[in-house]
Length: 106
Image (cartoon, rainbow, N blue to C red; front, side, top):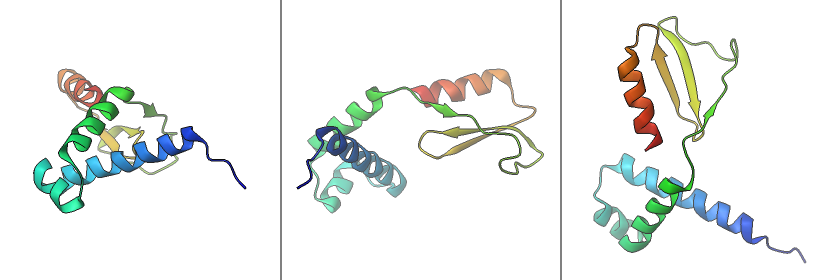
């Protein structure tokens, strides 16, 4: 008989809600409509959204040079913890980049 680890359940539930939140954003539906379609309560949706937003800051992963081909027009590529990639052009305005990074942290 295998024992269930409460930490593993919490992580998988967090991952599940992270996916749901991302799906709602991609769907273009209101939170109310999305929850109705998915059989979720709005209370749970908002509670998990708040929990996950405040859980941890945005973390970046090092992308090794030569690991993947990046177009010559991009000077830098950041891989976000969720798998998304942020490609930054060589001539990007510093103020604009700072604004984008601050928004990612929010």
